[in-house]
Amino acid sequence: MSFETAIVFAGALILLVGLFYSFRIISILRRQNLAVAWIVLTVLIVFFLIGFILFALQTLGLGLLANIPVESIAAWVFFFGSIFVLMMTFLNNRLFVDIFGIRLSDKEALIKFAKFLDIHPFFLQSRINPEYSVTCDSCAKKVKYSIPDIVRSHPNLERGVKIEEAMGTKNYTFFVRHRCEGSLREIPVTHDEKFEYRSKRASRVL
Image 1 (cartoon, helix red, strand yellow):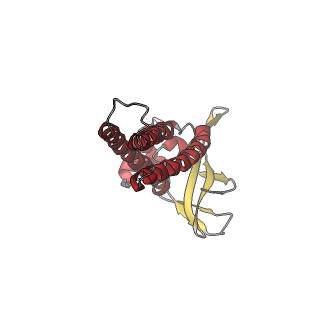
Image 2 (cartoon, one colour):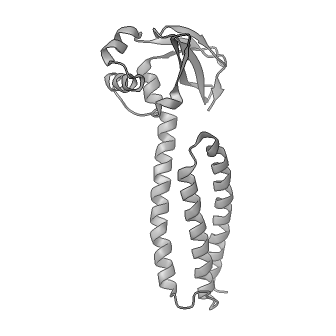
Image 3 (tube, helix red, strand yellow):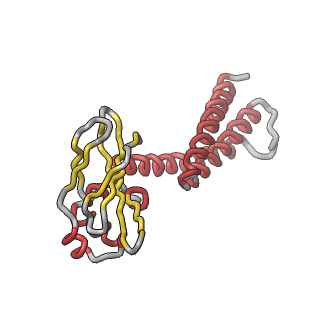
């Protein structure tokens, strides 16, 4: 076995480890209905694994597909490798946006929030306070937040705002994020339909 073939087989083993962790990630994200992109990524890893094995067998003269030259296999692996890199970039971008939020001005954030609630931005602005505060149950620090802060930290507002209706009234639960003793925590804070603070629940580490 040549050194190059040994390297290819070593790469295949590394892909097997990556495949194992991909399945674990999918099992976690499936509960949140966020697993589609990782399923596509896992399919690409399987393709790479097959390509690596075929490439190694071809170099050993044991090719299962004798009519396909090594160069063709390498070309397809490179092509799907570029798709793999694109997918990883997309997933990392989405991950960092979920962690660090998006850059929006207060005005842009309020417009986005008003559309989410299906109300006029002027009506929304007349009812909310410029700033609210809540005490973290873990570090006991006062955490200041605003509606624009909620929008910026949750690009997907369905994950940052929970709307509950009961007896003709609405309550809004905002998931307020803050840095707490080296970790990122989320505090569920409930406001009434006039956006006045009502209560909070136990925070959790993200």
